[in-house]
Structures are given as structure tokens and as C-alpha cells.
Length: 193
Image (cartoon, rainbow, N blue to C red):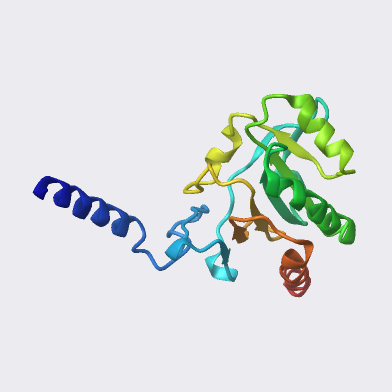
């Protein structure tokens, strides 16, 4: 009994040590994901925004390579998804609405993970009329640069400002109306800088 109590107390100390930070971004220049208090929606203001290292990989739909840095100057909505994921199926058309609403100012980019059948993921994109690009990454190797991100969480969305800095992270499925106010603010913010 005493041994079990000691193990439980030790585990509680470890957990509380991991979540003691009040900041959602560790110090430094690169983005490190931390979810204070287990939040699923986290926003980062100006000075708190950190640069996301380069995310790139092969395109799901063709033989090209997709790199987030090629979208600098646009607000980027980076979505981690899989065709096997129920919430992703509902969210994908919502992301397409965002892409359609801001074709010159926003770029939605997907990362398709844990989909070992490329043709099933391609059919998912075609059947839903999704035109935004997706990186095909079944093992999730491109996610390594998202330091601290719990890779088991799908869907997840990171919104980057025009400088490639993380402005928000969502660890849940989204509606277009969830993203629109943030995107509007980032577009306006960039216009005044």
C-alpha cells in the first residue's frame, strides 16, 4: 500500500512539474507547444509568437514537394488530419470555406498523417472538393518540428501569421467561423505593420 501511494505521489509530482509553466511558449526563438492547464485553444500575441521551423514534405496529390516557407506573406492555416478521422471529415469542408473566402491572403495546408493508403486520402480530398494542398506523411515525420505537440491529437490546427510565426493552436476540430475572426485580425495586423 505504501509503495502504491509513493508511486502515485511521484507521478503527481512529474505531471505537475510538466504543467507548471504559465506561458504557452517557452523562451527562445523557435515555437515550442505547451498547453497550459490542458487548454485546447491557445493564442499568441505579437511578442509571444515564435517562428515555426520549416515544415515540408511530399504532396498528397502529385509528385511535388510542399514547403510552408513558400507561403510567407500569407496567413497559413496548418491542419493535421487523416481521412480515417471522423472530426477531420467534418472539419475539411470548413477549412475549404476559409481557403475560398481568402484566396489571395490565406493558405490552408494539410498534413495527412497515419493514412497508409494514399489513394484513400486522395479520394477523400477529391470527393469533398478540397483544393488546398496537403503533405502526405503517414509516419508523421514532418511533425517533429512542432516541438511539444502531442502527435496523437488529430485533428489539430496551427495558424501562422504572415511572418511564419505561430499565432494560434487548436487541439480540436474547427468550424470556419472559429477561424474567421483570427484570420481577419492577422490580415489587418499585417496591413498595419
